[in-house]
Image 1 (cartoon, rainbow, N blue to C red):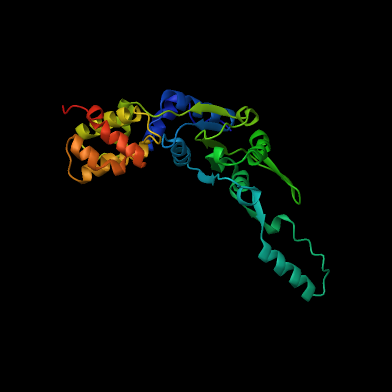
Image 2 (tube, rainbow, N blue to C red):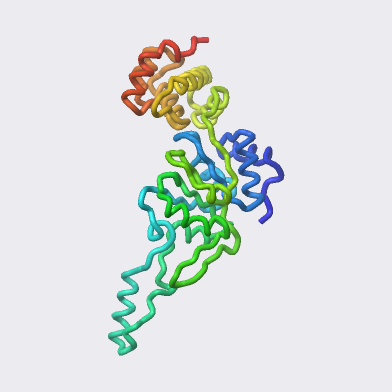
Length: 290
């Protein structure tokens, strides 16, 4: 399929129109994934916007977003397909009641329940497939994905090989709680998504929380940038920054000070030890009032 965008710069501009501010490197990686029909593997800490890029691309391209949330123990019955046991049972009983053969074939496509991976193959280039937090799944599931990522096809023993007529755009995310295998990495384009710097986070706040006063938004962006530098166990993501700025605006704050920052940390920092550390270091993280 031809790339719908003429350049990474055009893709970056179009993503901005759906409220996703990508940097140049992410725009390039996404542009190449679209043009080469290759999966895009995004790694980074929680809250940096890995999942949001898939949502933004689905909106921008006018495609269905099909999301597979990974977790420990996920298998093909949750990810690929399952059998419609109720319909199978009714078919067998109906065959018996009609005097037909008891060995009714109920393992055909008609009795197949499509799960996210199969749904994406069937939708083809009308879908964006998001395989979210792949690092939470086990090695066996990761190995299972290799055929799908190589050929955009899967093999179901009872049915045979099912291939996409045209490949969906596949976005995989990982928080890097464990290393993914090289065999999977080689099938993807790769990008590390870092926390934005203070200037970019300010731009994000202006887009995603326009009701927050400009001065307050800039102070929040700088404060969050400093807070992430404290070595927290769970540093705040972009979503928490937006929540914090919105909370401050909601309680009527025009500029950020240490007292109100400490009082509203529940919107930004989601771990008790991290909250204590930020409270102890609050003098060093709140920017001077302009």
